[in-house]
Amino acid sequence: VLKKTLKEGEGYERPNDGTVVQVKLTGKLHDGIVFTRKGHDDGKPYEFKINEEQVIDGLDRAVKNMKKGEVALVTIHPEYAFGSSDSSQDLAVVPANSVVYYEVELVSFVKGNESWDMNTQEKIEAAGKKKEEGNALFKAGKYERASKRYEKAVGFVEYDSSFSDEEKQQAKVLKITCNLNNAACKLKLKDYKQAEKLCTKVLDLDSKNVKALYRRAQAYIQLVDLDSAEIDIKKALEIEPDNRDVKMEYKLLKEKVREYNKKDAQFYSNIFAKMNKFEQVKSNVS
Image (cartoon, rainbow, N blue to C red; front, side, top):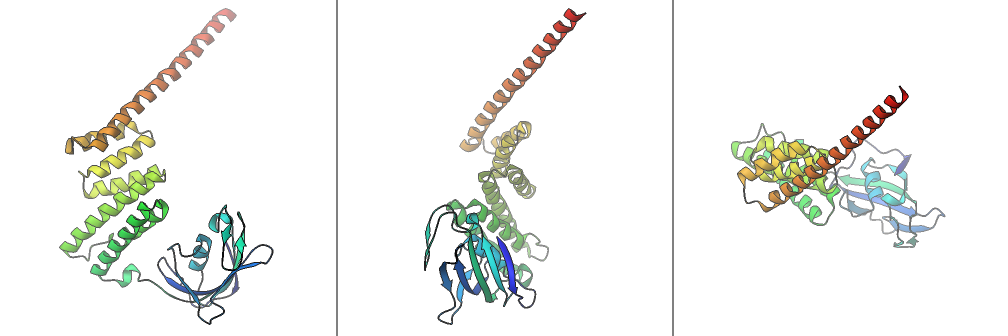
């Protein structure tokens, strides 16, 4: 996504996730054919919410980096535009794998509250809302976007020194749930190192959290840290001996250990065979 500013905006503020923006935009293909034009004709700007999949990803990203009143030319490659299939738009069809060009004016925007503008109860409510958004995205299989929602939720309640005792407890529950859910996202995205870190954060707050031990063991198995995986699984089984998922993971771990032992045995037998061959060659030479 490339943005070239044609007219400077005012101030320094830019939209953040969840901001409602009002824009005027014209979308064109490489040959100049206009496929969409919004916010120009009826005198009313086109409105959408940042990072809510209401427009293509490239447009979201570009507008997020604009100031009020700014006019920009945005070049968006297919992976951030309409992808690898034809897409029927308002005024024309965008062919598969097209680079598209937008002229965008950010007329105005209303930012969502940042955490420092909120009181403690508002932070807890905002975190709860982001968690629910994350859950909906997770169920829809949008793990990258769900992960960002969980991170945002934790950001609202991470620093809780000004919270009351009851609010601290609410914040703790939110941190545990969101970090656990985020770890599940990272496992789906094959980001095993981050999954392990998130589970460790949960275990720092609740050392007997079986889900965190189980998910961290999953991450350790993928990172080939089989000893650490075994420690977590055994601890999880001490707490919940009948947990079916953990038992299945233990079975998988034992298979992995056997597999790696077999590979090791093969590796060392190859090394010894080569050494013996080398010794024979040496003795023949002398």
